[in-house]
Each structure stands twice: as structure tokens, then as C-alpha cells.
Length: 91
Image 1: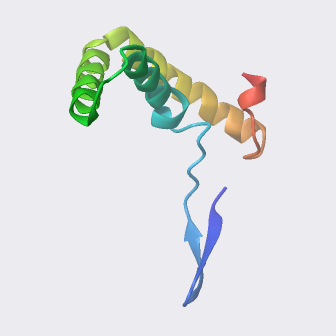
Image 2: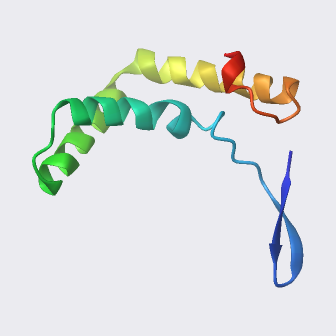
């Protein structure tokens, strides 16, 4: 599951970073985006304020954080079961 990265010194091991198992990618950014854009920010300062507010709300939502953590375990197992291939469509 480790990829190779080619640089001037040759190949180096590069740890996997599958969007299928990274909580920020499979869950957090979508939740933040949906909640923020539903409020139609009027300018960059309003956008930043809404993003901070949504992160605070998620941070206080223990049930959501626990569900995301449980999902990471499930997604890691799916990644193992599919030999690191795409599995999002199997969920």
C-alpha cells in the first residue's frame, strides 16, 4: 500500500493517502461546505466566519465525531479487503 515517489535521488516510499479513508476528505469537508454555502456567504470575511462557526459546531458534536471515527475503521478494513483499490462504491 505504499506508493513510490520519484525525486532527484530516485524513488522514495510514499505513505498512502487515500481520500476514501481520510476523515477530512470523506466526511468533514462535505459537511462544512454544505452548511456554509447553505447560508450564502456575502464576502470572504463572512465565509471565514461561517467556516469557523461550523468547525466549532462539529467539534461540539460528540456523536458525529464518534460516527466519523467508526467510519474510519470500516473504511480501513474495506481498503484492506480491496487490496488498496477504490471501494467507495461498495459502501
